[in-house]
Image 1: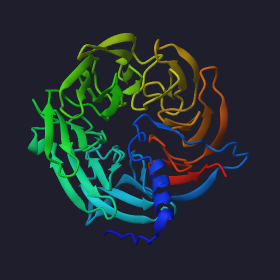
Image 2: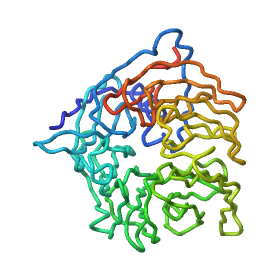
Image 3: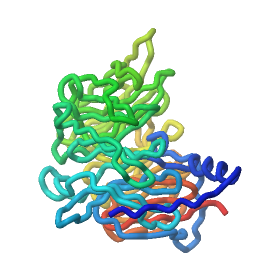
Image 4: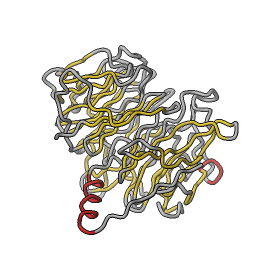
Length: 420
């Protein structure tokens, strides 16, 4: 069943102002409005000896799907039993209260770990122009109405595009830019797809690439709007509007690649576990063409590697949870982007995730600690911490309108950390 949200009528300039402010504070997709894990807002600190104010907290039945926040609503993906069957659903909540507004059944609720039940959904909804875009583990792209959850279109990459899934099944989220939706997972000649966001029709298709769990990133480098896919062959960048190939950067693939590419200026960072390592490449434009040149490569699982925890970049430095399968004890590190040199390392963050809000890192450690850290290469400088959850946390925080939204595998919480 869906619960229909009753929208209050508010008139005049006040409505316009509130809408503008709400839009400005949105976190509408995985890793934020620019897919870089960065918010221009600020975190009010210190919290003193107390936890920040809890706006709401509610059960979330399993999953690593993050929150997307748009126009006063919060969206995520969870598993529910529907008519005796385990199903994956897209869930909409009121951002102010946590009240459920609607849910829509989109996929089977098992098979997240290559045949077993796993820990639930790992993809995050993407919200754009009143629509919610989703990609299921079985590579079915969905578009829903954001107000009521009604289906608008769907496209099955396995059935319609000779799709090729991956072990553990897809964990990627959808990227949106302009009038296009970007997904990967088709077969030869159509492995990368640009779809019309309103109809789901194919605008362009290209390449013979095999997917990873990585979410594509839309960015602008040297004035060229492009979408970068992290595939089993490495990075593949194409023109967002035409799908024309711009550049490639080869990178080893072993078992699983999950982080999103991290773009800072003309440098792109990438990493994979299972003994692969990490690297950074510099993108240069020569005439109408582009080249990707390796700046450095750090092999193996130390000292610089990310499994699924994507770092953020500020002023030429990466901050994130580095390490492969270092559950609970793994370190947060600061790494110089241009060289791969580790500036500092702090243990006991595990396979958590972090974002950058203003000049401060908002980190959700694997053990449920929510920690605020100064984003500086000088040294690890912790400012505040609170115990948000008692169970496993592999989900990326979201930040919108002065509020932190975090999930564990069983709960979701909203904290108010706005400046008063």
